Image (tube, rainbow, N blue to C red; front, side):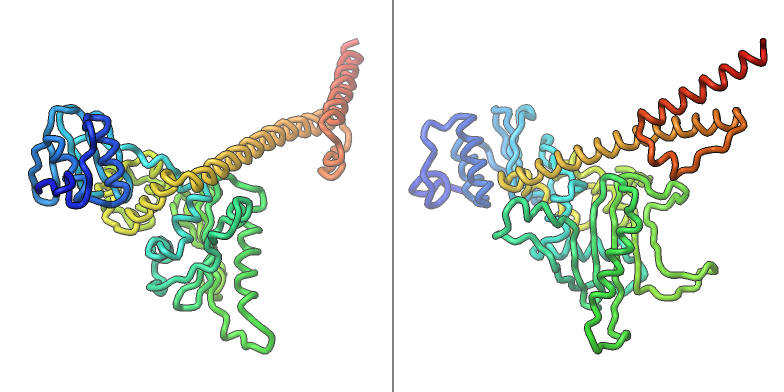
Length: 391
């Protein structure tokens, strides 16, 4: 590859006063613009020896800089005496940066699984969960992000609503906390998707399955060891009434697959591993750990968020919101546990005194101060009775 008349690479001017820092900046610019030829030409113009090894370009020079192209991103880091430039599924001579975006943040989750331009990712995820059901080949996202929406709108509805070629209604959502009424809400949403299909005068036979898929970072059903839980309308013996209402959970906390065996795991397990660990993985890791092009595409969506200032702001805002909500729920749980201890103490004291135990409704009307006062009064009564007995 010879420099053109205008410098390295046909039609491009040579960078003046090229040194290590300027080289990295110019190559970064070339790679971000997807101009591979220009990046290679700049490296050669800087005096690098270029040789091709199978599908990998390797450039050796004394300057300890690594420039690696992964998807649409360029990453540089100090790796020693070698500079490498490769494709997203190639090994670079050194390490690359972690993606740094967690798909468990619902904004990232929605962009990853709810973007029409990345419908292959959505289809692959759905087929990984809905094993044994009609395979999905096409999907329509019914509530994508729209460019005209403002930030508040984009953070308002963060589940993914879709329909497939079989007419099934599909709702996918991410939950990093466990609201007390989550099962009831999921049943209600699935029921609304089901009932909403029928217009006046239509027959029930036109109704198609309504399926809700909830990805949980915490454990909702500790009594069940499975990663994927599938709830439908069945008789106790297991006989199916209908599969038109389905609620699926993917409980990431139950994942047993590791990096050593995830490549040969089930599709659902591979997705669970990706969702749990994507933030810490590098693009190179993605190519090595997963055989799925769709998971690599999902990782590319996360990289895009990290490199797009507007999307990064929305991601950070949603991450802060989720952390605040989780903190509130933890605090509420702690308060609930403390309240439960006080109520248990009151009932124990009432039992020891031979009194009728207060009902749940009666104690529910008391605030924390009133519960504390009631417990102290009962404790004083018990103490006085014991003193009288000893006297």
